[in-house]
Length: 146
Image 1: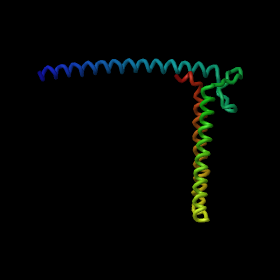
Image 2: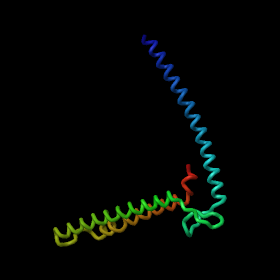
Image 3: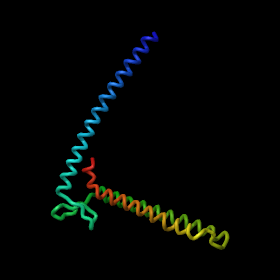
């Protein structure tokens, strides 16, 4: 009985290995084909469009600006979330500073720390997000990236 179970387990394992190998080859070939189609679409798009550095937008060769609503909505959502996070961050630290000042009637936090917390960290986050948005704008419209 044990021998039969071992033989059946080996047959199932061999069948699964064969099935997964065929599936991996199929998805690899399909992925290569999808990359070729995406590259062809991007090449055709860049043939008829250019990225205007001054407007930070894609423009057709005849000068018409392309507006992608998905990117505009994402930019607006990031702006709202970023402003809310900035207000909460600054509010928390100002509240913390005021609480410590009211307890001791003098400012105990070092000024370098305050400058870092209130200016440097929000500025770094803003520059990082702005860089990501600009990088995503240069990549092209969203429908070409699929």
